[in-house]
Image 1 (cartoon, rainbow, N blue to C red):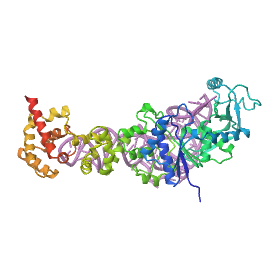
Image 2: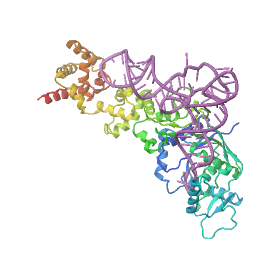
Image 3: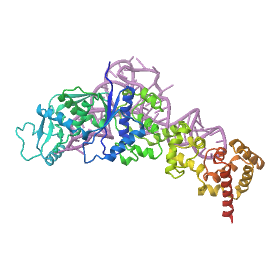
Image 4: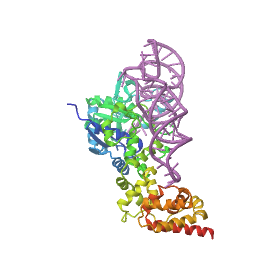
Length: 474
RNA sequence: GUCCCCAUCGUCUAGUCUGGCCUAGGACACCGCCCUUUCAAGGCGGUAACAUGGGUUCAAAUCCCAUUGGGGACGCCA
């Protein structure tokens, strides 16, 4: 019987949940779900000056929106300081850690010197074997790193990565104010929470040998490691704010479906043959770290947009309406206490699914079905609402006015009758009508549009269009 | 500067571990055609890649080395 997989996502709340963090969370989540394991959420907020409550909320909100549910936590490191203290004291008592009295400014200048002289930048260990404390100075605690030999990171994605211990720094595990630092807290927490597979960004690969030394100092065996390659912007630099929207919730707000973003993110580095679109169930079934590539990936908003359009097309209209309604409300197209009929809305949505790449676009298009008044696009108006189309508009209006069954098929018959009579192509009639009822030159099929708008509103809009033509003439 | 990672179309990738089935496949974007009442969606087709140089081998996108390029880390941040 193998042990149960336990993984974690451990963001620090110094910003919103961003694209890179979301992908790390996703891979952890998939690993846990695929292996029937446990997914732990841990908030690494030991840097109190930069961590905020708002960001914790925001990260949780982002996780929930993406549907990445966790089984344990959220734990907060700031609530676990006594645990780190216990572990730390053990190291100090065993001589595996020591107090260092070097002032920060001095360390800084030594670092600069080392870098300019081309020497490895690391603490020289001058406080290692001090036998007495320096009075009146607040000390930090450093971990005594081995100086000889090698540390091997056996990574599930990168393979065996060898580090010379001489390169490893005597890292600070407690600040001079007594608070623990990252490298200590991750290791202690991962031990304490029985994490047996650490999946994180490969910007942590260099930290890993240090952490391995910590594990061994505590007498624990190391978990598996999997270091995911970074996500880059279009200029190949690490993805950051200047590349545009990087916050997960920004995608929510601009009309992306969570499943589309998940699907996009998982394909950044992971693949399953030629398949592009995966349901959540499929992902859970097929996901494996073995199929994660080692090279970094450029974030491509256009492909995400395409995936989103695919998800909009393939989501059933009833469910899609639940996604769209908040956008309709937010844009003031409908009132929260006066929502459109669900059946009617679904019918309207069907006509727009393959024409909308985002929920926001869908909501916008829906507005011409719902609004009382139509705003004409200026170009559309001058091109199609003019003397040439006026008589046709009057003709179709009169014909539609006497139609009792206002269905797409009956509406089509009315249109065909007029085009045949006047010996014109359907477009000659359809375009002016389209502008009259939608204000635009593009829309779903005109017969469906009219049916959805309904007889009364259609006639009113045709009247207004005819009126508009008269005015512009007179 | 030191250490670490990475390298197939513009982008995401299949193929690399286990060399031959690769005349290098799919997807996004782009271009063309078809469908068509507009716009889409859809269908069909097209442009486009194994970074370079050395090896190893009967045979290399695939293995090895070097170079180049890109990324990351080097904090009393995480």
